[in-house]
Length: 259
Image (tube, rainbow, N blue to C red; front, side, top):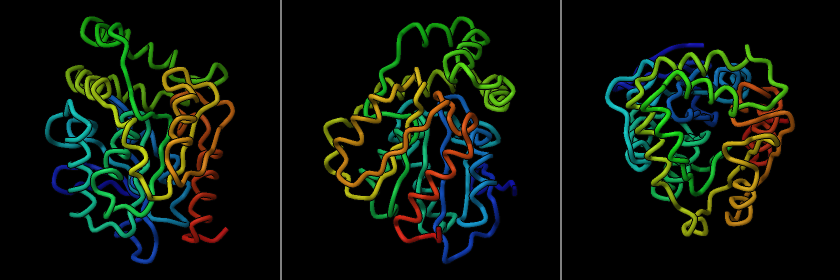
């Protein structure tokens, strides 16, 4: 992988510069996280497509401040994609990253020919207890993410990169992310989406249960669904091979990569 930074946004890429005639997967992490969530996808799909995983502002190695509105993060991503001149960008986001993707394909659809939604929803209400735990006992929150963010059979070592990244994230930034999630609601706008969308759910996701993906699949016109066994909310690290295969199948169906 190659680590880069453009206009304060840190990212890793499977190859750089991107290959002009390939689509570019742009991976967006969840609340309080970093690009390490997507390392298996950046590496595992780089032989067929351009792969880029970003740190949102205020996260990981990126500059700037975290946001408390999904719309602001979406603007950051749209600016990054344009500045980096990424060919055929396909945003792929998990949790708040998925909310950002939804906002992008609703408000900036001209930039994105397709999208991938992973373990996310059109509305992301947050329990007050989660916000209180972030404020009062951040280490306990990180432990909760490990306990509730994965399937029971997931080896703890698989989650270490993202738990370490969350632990290193400023609690105020993580709190802002969750407040942004709590405000987010585009349920009434899903019929506006006309780009092809892959909807991915983890069979054992307790934070955004599969019913969230069911709603997306039912209400977005042009969807493909991947439901992955043995995976919770941190699916990219739990079942990387299955997720990579689902993404490759989606892009193959669009005629963008060979089978």
